[in-house]
Length: 306
Image 1 (cartoon, rainbow, N blue to C red):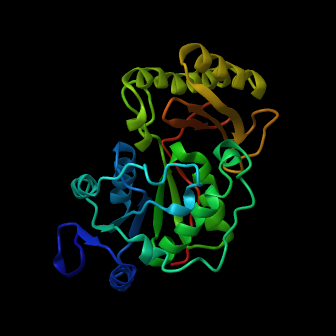
Image 2 (spheres, rainbow, N blue to C red):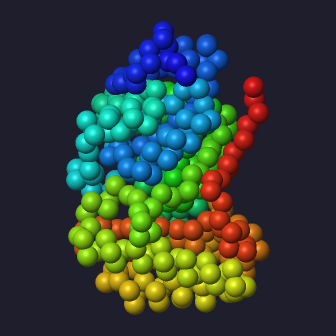
Image 3 (cartoon, one colour):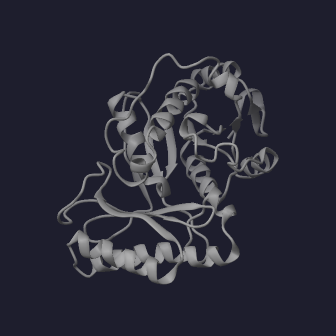
């Protein structure tokens, strides 16, 4: 695996112009590009996406950009964890070829004159309490996809609603990109890896492990033959309430990726929840078939334009 002009170490690019010039050369050389968009503070979940991209592509590009359009006025844009030096070391060790770290003024040189609105898959799960959030997500992805021009892009299944919205975005706007969802990476106790875990106290980290255990209890009901969503949801809620001091935002069982309510299980579904602790709101989910079986990854879009 080589980069342009024989450069073997990771290349750091900070401007849109330079990134576009580099991508044109990669495409001219017929190198397939795998793209992992992130907001930085890379953890094992991000590294799993990079590893998957490394296995499937000639060149792996990772972007680090804390997108202001994804944050509401009362959310944690300024406090969002950032550590560029740490990220650079982790990305290079993971085999990233190009690390794209643009400045906000380069990405948004002036006020946007066009609004991109998401109309579906947003009135459930996290989208219900974060109006406009996914508009910000697809806006930055529109820009990044047009800058990087990837063949494949990789997202974690922990942010499953985001994955579903991105699937609709790619499909509706005919992006020639294959979307791959990669299974959630977890700590030994089952807690999903997240940049926001740094806000948890030691005791909260122990309690937070019961979020996934609650979801697993719901999954086991499905494996055992339960098909009533109300009973499955109640089981998850009972576990979280009995084992943690966290406050449940939601527990939902929906079709995936369409994110519609289900009356009975007969297709792929997502069992998802969000729980508030003192300084963190944690999300988690299990995506499975109607019998409770989980896949390691999901390929949501396959285009054969070449």
